[in-house]
Image (cartoon, rainbow, N blue to C red):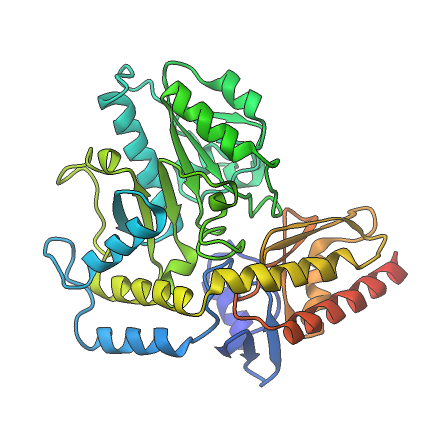
Length: 401
């Protein structure tokens, strides 16, 4: 029984992996069990932004694992405070709550926003509403899929929690019309990743910041995929020079080694929590805090946001220069690109399989978009490798139409 057969036999079939069995990785390259090398243009949905097995991160993980890993938040450790301080400094917000996964960070934001709505805004009990966006993806918990607009994410998982109002992404007038006295927060991704790297119109975030302030509504931004350098700035909202009331972080915060996430918000918002109101056995453990802090240090020392801006401009320029009838649109910012494929001519999944055969790892999203999000340490020559493979794949697919 090979590894694909073993996983298929004993695992839940909630993923449909590409047919390759990976065994080790370094930087932007991964190898399969047969020794074949592949260029990673996925970086685990931004979780491996630092590249695979970054030596500083591996060293920090190893040293801390031998010293102190998990004791729970029932006790203080000598590692967590420094991480929380760094997160507050980076975001210019006043308090941070550590968790593990991105979905947990979003769930935390929802709980805190509702508490703010009841205790500060004086919304009647159990009537708080949060405005979310069509096309959103914030995670897989029952609460989060409950306000998804994607039927496949919701099917057979109800009943869902009430209190969420969906509006078109990037439509400031729709947000304005949806706000009521019971609205406690607007919760948006800064850029929608799972929808195919969809950017809001220029100026939307600035207008949203102004609207939320005027209407006494919290502005909460999910930067789990878009944050920590992916778009060429530390956070994607910085492209419009605004600061939200709260931000959710994850993915790259764990340095590609551990699940680490956080909800960072204004101090007065974080202070609404008291002992017993929220927690996590593993959230903020000493090992995770050490790796996350080193991940932030490496990102600053190597200026990975700056690299993403420079290499992202190059990647997007190369993509825009491809003239293929299969491509409807190229969208992106920094080292994050979505290539919209004409479904009448080709499927994005088929293109990802063709890329795999050319030793480039990429994956489709929403059936029509081929997504590229390489580690931020990628070089121009490696981007050229990806572009060459993509051009060849598009040419092959054109002849098969």
